[in-house]
Amino acid sequence: MKKNELMKHNCPLGKAMSALGSKWKPIIALVIKDRKLRFGELAVRINVISRKVLTDQLREMETDGLIIREEFKEIPPRVEYSLTEKGLALLPILYLLEEWEAKYQNKEEFAEYAKCTK
Image (cartoon, rainbow, N blue to C red; front, side):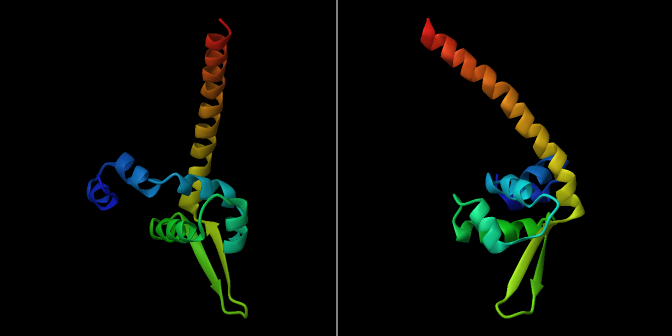
């Protein structure tokens, strides 16, 4: 189901997953946290993402109300990104997902190790 199709429905989980529907958006949110970061800083901190994909993801996150894009009329131009109240409210959920993965990743690694040592 495409993002636009998910947004047409009133299912809160569908809308939430649509807003976070890429592997990069949660990572971007966790990198920004409660601070303001410039595009270049984000690109350096998430160096495995292309600049085009980062730009696209930031635009979608702004449309979804997760980030604020603040443009300064300076030379050279400067743009800073920060999380909205909605984006900040997402952080505890993302931290829980990290804990969940860490908890079960270790068990799976141990089980895989145990299989190999038999």
